[in-house]
Image (cartoon, rainbow, N blue to C red; front, side, top):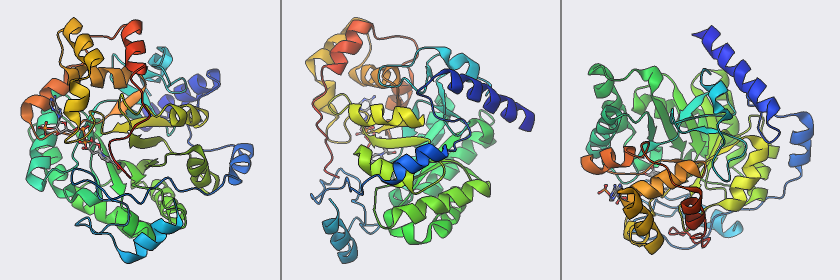
Length: 373
Ligand SMILES: NC(=O)c1ccc[n+]([C@@H]2O[C@H](COP(=O)([O-])OP(=O)(O)OC[C@H]3O[C@@H](n4cnc5c(N)ncnc54)[C@H](OP(=O)(O)O)[C@@H]3O)[C@@H](O)[C@H]2O)c1
């Protein structure tokens, strides 16, 4: 297994050196790169707008979504083996990291493979999360996205164990992502141990900081770096960093290049600037709200261009949007507690959007987010 991993990393390295935009497979950064980034200005991407009920709690909110005074004040201050196959051209906007659309994986700059389609669990109760994760793993999904703030890590862990016990998947085949909440940034090591405990796992495939928080996110990220060296985390990354400067601020003060950035990304907010910026690091974009998010999905599902493309392929709008994400080089994690939707969302590997259709999808970009954080 170790030899296999070494071989995988060597292949990834060879591939990355041949692709100028690719990041290092050992997840490190050159001194020059680190130095040049160290001067990045501090800039917060968060806004102070209030959230709609369908949204995730704002950073600094308590578990019930209540904003704490301290955090409000803070906010006010801030505004392997498949590596060789990755030669297949990446989708638009993903020149650094080639998605293997056949195998449904991407090689991260950490040297680990990650599935490009997964199940999201935001707003799912413990039992809903358990069922959704179980159904997803049964249907072929291998990527699961949760977060401490969702309050369902235990349920996710139960769904994983059910699937493993029934024998259709092994732990090694599953890729689990969780997120460190902003309240925990002051004691990242404890937050990591607590997530491991709640999930019932002895390692987490990917942990990401849930939100940018200048002043506290660097030490939180360093706690994740330490956990990588201890084998508790395999890859680490970020979520909700919306400007190159903010991303570079964090990168300039830390050692391990983020493997992934998870931002709101969908046809009306295609994250073009950030995706271009990420290429130099070999960091991959992952889309949250890939379908627009609860309460907004019909806006995208009824978009005329998306409906026409869906009709042409005899697919649903949801399937077309998800297929677009993958071809555009975005990892997608649609959330659902509906067994039929979960199955439908995975049936997107049997058709392909034409170049013309991809261009029509690209033209839908309005740089408009559904969420306000
Ligand atoms: N990092 C962050 O700050 C952040 C923020 C938000 C979300 N996330 C992550 O990203 C994941 C995805 O975002 P999301 O779940 O909020 O939004 P989403 O995936 O864009 O949309 C979820 C909505 O789509 C519906 N849906 C899913 N598949 C469908 C289908 N085939 N047909 C019709 N409706 C369908 C779901 O309803 P049903 O349950 O009825 O299927 C639900 O209402 C989350 O679950 C979470 O893991 C991260």
